[in-house]
Image (cartoon, rainbow, N blue to C red; front, side, top):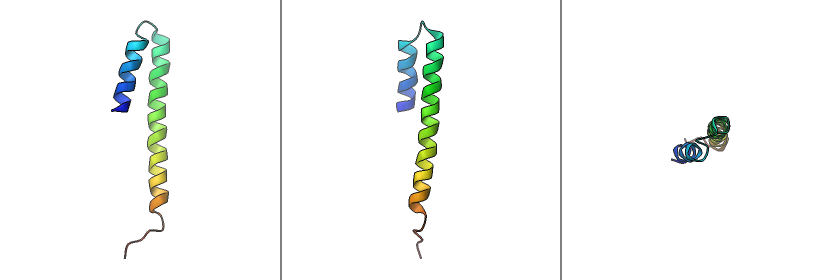
Length: 53
């Protein structure tokens, strides 16, 4: 939901500035990818060593 709202707000805020809108969308996508990767790595690290017998 946050990703979609961020894209929508950027579109409303920068509708007359296409270069700035592209920069905002690129930053939103990059932030989402970085958050996904870091979340995956954190969960993987947290589950390492916790073997259920």
